Image 1: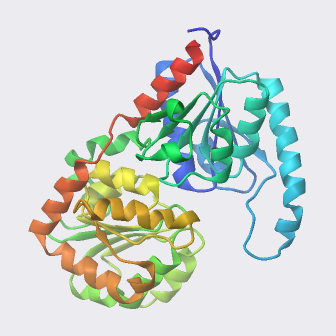
Image 2: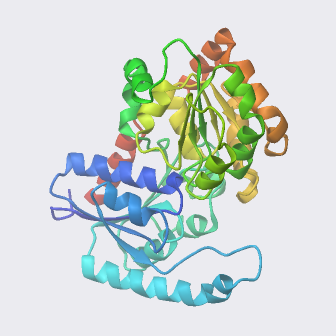
Length: 370
């Protein structure tokens, strides 16, 4: 390769698990191939990457950056100053660390560090998870060397010659969940004879999904369904408080599930938002899924993500506005319809891209070689 080893790599991505976990997966795979590589993460101060990245064993520097809110707030008034501060600090990081390449997976901090990298002519790679590209990534597309994507038709956002269809990086431990079912049920203290529902609202939780479950939790308990429920940190205490006094011997409530391979392995059906990373994981986990797209995302791209599966008979769709009434009933119907579960599992598994992380690192290495 043209770059002098050991490699120095900056990876930036955060705000949500959908940006953080692909970034960590890429770092792990690059480190596996190049054990002496020095990998530095750049994130946003106060966001979850400042905790999750060190937990994964990597150094991270935080920028003073956040997104724009939908109403007039102090944070919005400070936004121009945050942007200038973050861009200046990103340039300082680039000059001091002298990376051979910079990789952006999205999130607030990704913009300033990627802009600084391209300005300093550092080889750069975007990993775009969604079917709809954000404004910053679209602006960077002409300046970076590669854009790794998970959906067809992305040439409407990026130069066609820079696109590589790789899929989204997912947790390596999801590749082996087929053999973990009994161990996973034992881990959660569950019976092998009962049906198990996994409820996910993304790394930060989903109000609609949580409220839908709270409204009809008695239906699940009466049907003797075992429940693994990731509420999100913000909703955790509220959900626990609302359930106080009920017999919850068959319910496991978590603000965040660290060992997701065990949760997926234990589940017979999954209820989830329809973020790009969530869908990539569900495909790899081969799980019958009910998708509840978030309405609070750009261009309603989660609904587009979900429909891409529904059209292939690979998932069930419940719209956000209908979820509070319909979601639990749909979950119960699917849980006890094993032929339908097998059909959905077969169809969703055909969409999996188990080698996505390898292919993304392949592209990073090609960029380094030039």
